Length: 350
Image (cartoon, rainbow, N blue to C red):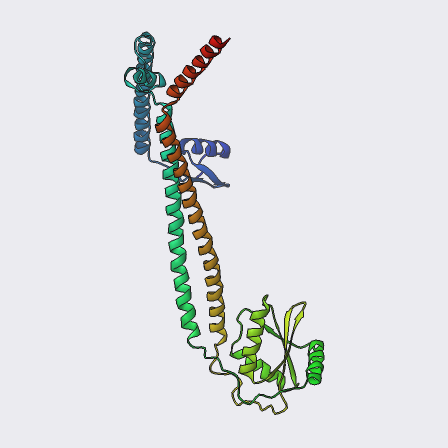
């Protein structure tokens, strides 16, 4: 809220300074006839301001009284502790613990300490084995879900078997087709999806303009490449010419045949779609990764159990040795007896 009032004195500076001091506001505008003063966001009426000041003074007095009482109690307690320091140990300190331990405590022997350490290590190993077994159970459940999904996807895929009427080519034709196919720049990439209906369609579209088609796959194992090549041969109806190693992977060359007839439907209905093939590839990768993870966890569990068994066997041997021969003090006494007897025998002989 702003206030504006008309000047009635000839000195404008005196009016502005006096009004600002009396009201506590901020001067916004001053011209020939008016002075505008803003009260501010923290403006309080006089009654409210006085109540706030009284409350602040009362709070300060209470805090001062509490601080004085706290300082007095601290001085009294410190003087009492200094007086009785030689008689009793202060509560909750290390000296009190040592005093109680000396009066009522019992010292732990070396055997008990070793037993406690052994029990702690055994409990830690058992806890670690349980943790790894829990991870193994989770991995097995994930693997089961991946297998279920993979079986569900592969149920819609019905591959075609080999044809009874197979067209053959001679060795000279195979050599020529292989050389031409390797020199071809156009090729079809065979990615992570593997074989699906779009791959067969692209092969027929290539055969529309040329007799050969070249596919490049990035599979690492030759056996998988040969299996893929045979499946493509059965599905497309072409003739497998060669499987060659190239810098980009493996090149698979197909000849469409002399009696090639373009099918009515380029996309076979018995193969997976592009989306289902991608889901199948992801499920296979997950299944393979989980299988490796499960094998590692099982080997870790076996190793932990074997380590625990070996430790228990060693502890059993040590305990049987102690039972048979007695404690260290008894063994030392027997050794001292035999040494003294041997020395007496030597003295008598000399």
